[in-house]
Amino acid sequence: MSDSTRGSLRRFAVMIYGPTTIFALGEGALLPLLPILAAERGADAGLAALIAGLLVIGQLCGNIPAGAVLPRLGERLTMAISGVVVLIGAVGIALTPGLWPLGASAFLVGVGAAGFGVARHAFMTTRVPLAFRARALSLLGGTFRLGMFIGPFVAAGLLALWHDQHATVWFLVVCIVAVILMVLLGPDPEQRIAEEERRRAADGGSAALVVEDTGEAVTGAIPRIERVGVFRTMWRHREVLARLGIAAASLSAVRAARQVVLPIFGLMIGLDPSTIALVIGIAGAVDFALFYASGQVMDRFGRLWAALPAMLLMGAGYLGLALTDPLPQDEMWFAMFAIVIAVGNGISSGILLTLGADTAPPEDPGPYLGSWRTLTDAGGAATTVLVWGVTALASLPWASVVIGLIAVAGTFGFVRWIPRYVPGRPEG
Image: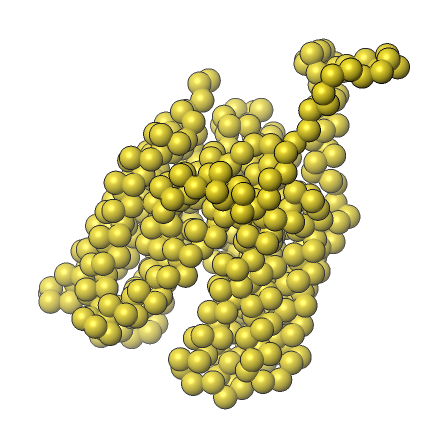
């Protein structure tokens, strides 16, 4: 990585990567405890899963409204307001009695998380040069993964210390307050980058951008950005959303399936919970270790060189997993295929963010990114229902086969549509 690229990425550390890591850390600590909090209030297993799922549903529902308000409020204010929404939801989880207030509060947390995600995505889309966009967005995805990976361990430590599930909720509150303060009191990224551009222009690096104010009246039309709104944006870009967006949704579905399929598969072949946790933990470490390599591949060779092997590896992992049960040494095969899936997931880090940024209108990306993220989140959200339905009708191995076939179909979608809709690899 060149010094200029490293310096450019470092500029975003405090602005974007720091708040994202802290946000994900608090959310990652809360997620495993939501079903337990619901069960404490009288929910059975199915209802507890539904209450926990309301956070994901809130995130799905919050993307389009976030994309609609982003052009009016700007990235910084949108992130701050989204943090306040999450804060209200977290306080509601901690203090309100009953199941449905708990579900409504979890929904609010998801809505705020969606707004925060759309705003940071739009900022990176408009501010990061194409030459290292994938690395910057892979690093953004990596910081989120880091927070979600460490969060459950923080939750375990808090539970051991205070013996109260609500400690994790208050930890989320502390994290969100820190995020809001960082966003509001830290350097304004938009203003800082504009100042740097003016400074470079004043130094002669971009003399064409320096325009002297002569005091004369301006003649001719004054250029302005056309704000078309989220639904007109969806219609205007319906072709890419219906083609490349569906392929991206299939990747999101294949990714999300590992969180459902792997633990249940481990139980099905007779592994104890500690062994399952160990295998999934090792796979998670492999996944996390590869996040920046994904950005390097995409920037140097093109987006397809990350998307294609990622989908093929995950598809092969799910299809192979379906054959694990009747084989001897099925524990070894289970661990191997879990790691294969993790490698595929790791080298796809940041690709959904990058493809969304590549295809978004550069002058007003917010509404488009809200639509793009709704599609990808819908793919992930539908996975749980799909795995449950296929397992109920057939078996878990057949559900794994279906996920593998979705990966194969998504591979063909990426091969067909990435070259058509995504800019070529930048030179130099």
